[in-house]
Image (cartoon, rainbow, N blue to C red; front, side, top):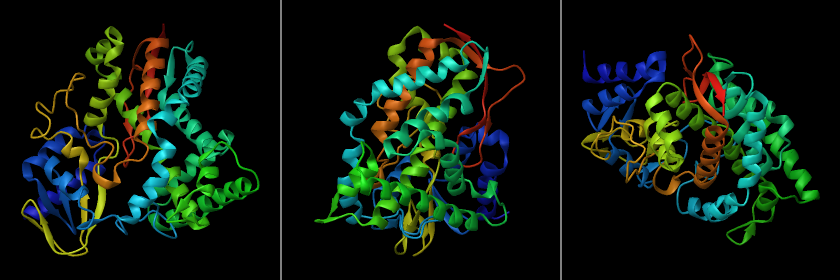
Length: 393
């Protein structure tokens, strides 16, 4: 069997094996053993921490423009825009999610977390994804966006139509994305119209008043930024919580470490982001003939940047297969790297820390419900099912 075919089979396992979706780290390690960068079918994949970092910090060689289909009518801003325009957009958007501004909303987020726990704490068990990890960050983000939280189910369905279109129509996922993108544009357009008439304490209002290169943002630009907010703000923190608690629910040693010392929570979150890496790969497109760690890359070829593999690379993380809540430094790739590093990093960390704190204050013990195992989705590592048995504090 050729190396290319054997490498392709290796990667197919990640998408088709339920066991591997639940525990991908051994496969990541096998990928790394095969090479720091490999040709896999029509694309090249970057695997090692050094290879991934080099690709992500060089957008002039590896572009985000047209690297992935997201059902948008135009490039999704700023995800599919490269520098220098990317930097200009980030100067508008980054202040909306600054550490200080997000910290100002911490009481609101903590109140919502406690409200959700109140609803199931006396039941003895909970389906974690539906009852906690999805509604908590999604409701908070909809408030930031200026959308009614009562519409969460509709918004999350739209988000899934972009991120997981094959679950709606396995034979025509691109069509699902395009149709979903149009519906999201319609909903965002209604929000823009409402805020044009009357501003509110929300991100849409601030974008309407923002300027890009000396002029007001166009309506199309606000729609394209909003599309990114929808599928990023309504999915990634949910996935991070699902992945983290799926691990903790099956690892009593690590659970007890948190209960014994709550000061470990920030370090535990960073380590679980590294170990579980919810968004395990991101795409780029080569702008010219080049190479990655000796692997040739042709002009126009897609490059898959496997940050999940990079996060278990011993060359960057000593004893990478050990989950160590005191790991320092911990320069993981869960929030990306380089110019396109996640713009919601401060928001995500705030949401994760408060969720961890409230859960471990209110829940004295938890583990997988008898006969149950975490069931992971086939794309971003959220859980389709995470049934927990709980004991209130």
